[in-house]
Image (spheres, rainbow, N blue to C red):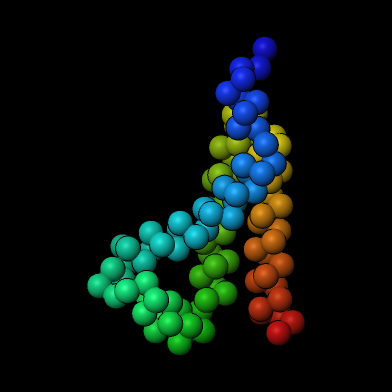
Length: 102
């Protein structure tokens, strides 16, 4: 029998928002660990944008969606896992556009 808490967190929107926010949180943690002496705006402009590695860093940060996806799968929250997969496809579309189309 499914508990009400499990059903509450088994939503595509929860997975989608977790899938969108996990890479952003990963990028922010990377900033805190390595470049905390700079402001985040300066880190983005001087490190990521100036070196033309924004897209590469985003594609690396999306790897954390794999962990979020498997956590939802292991806890039988399949709709939330589907939302994470959808947000990963959005990130992938952005990366493909930035690298090959633009």
